[in-house]
Length: 432
Image 1 (spheres, rainbow, N blue to C red):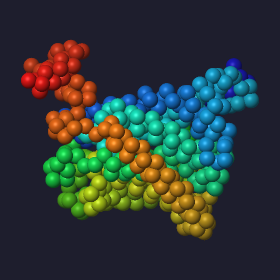
Image 2 (cartoon, rainbow, N blue to C red; image 1 turned 120 degrees about the horizontal axis):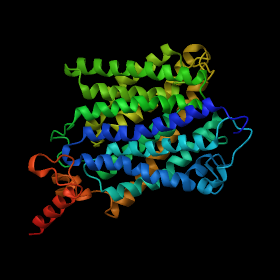
Image 3 (cartoon, rainbow, N blue to C red; image 1 turned 90 degrees about the vertical axis):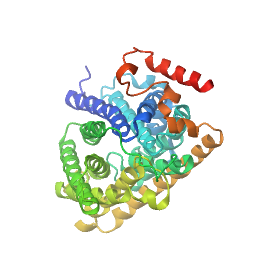
Image 4 (cartoon, rainbow, N blue to C red; image 1 turned 60 degrees about the vertical axis):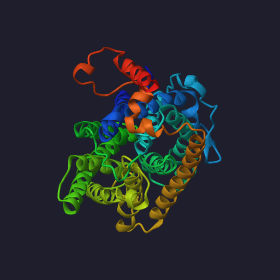
């Protein structure tokens, strides 16, 4: 055993990595419950598929592109840790095994790409989505994560505070979601046809798994079992509670009801907003971040109807807007009493930190949006991105996966290949 190894920190980091991994099926359930029953499997597969793809490229060269030796403040050396074999050896001076950090950050990469999927369910080809996720991870996520978190990255060196991913994860994914929602286009019938969530129980289960895993996401970013992790943990809890209340109050005043979907959405909005700010604000500041995010995100989800883009599961309204809220509020609510040790505008720190936060946030937003737009346009032009109108109307699950999420009565109980048989029978029927 390495004499310098801190077993407590190591245990916490491996646990935190596993918690972030749990967020990915949690996200799949959260998104899956919000789509219609005929497309739920495709939605779940879009999220889980990116986990498989990003996991592979993270090992091959993704980690190296993100945390390899800096090249011009823009990217890490993609060949430095190729295949990760060079990182397997013990470091007698390290308190934390580097592989624990590699694993932890790999979960971030997979989750970020999966977030984007919520903008285009019920109308997207699975293989086209996997191509998009792969290319976007290479051209956008790995470079942006390097900018934000790696020594030498230009956003990191500027002094922008993003403790656990407001810019690198949520603004980044939200901007890409907006771009591909525009490129792919509206679902058939939207917004005239009601497209209600098919399983709100599944939505709330997904939100609960996300909330649990998010403690690993945020507190794990302390990279140690220490005071910073404890402060971040509490701030994450406080902000999420406040955001759920804020969202529900908006619903009550606007619509007359407090809904389960609103509660679940408020939970996620609060988690998103506190992610960049959790090490920079006090618990009271965390409550403020949460309630502001809950209110603004609840209002922002209506933007798609005003501007006409079909962001099906409100990735833009929750992740892009929530990420911007949390990132920019650091410039107002940061206090030097918190682990980050910086004062914002309301604590006598002036506007300097706010300016830095704005530069980092809008640079990532612009870059991600433009590159996602270009990738999406190429895939659409090649016919790889959107299913046919007939497939969309009947449901993408049967066409894309030859399965149905719910087999009821005599249709069920056919064993492992029942869905395949149903899909084949349907295609034979259509051929006749």
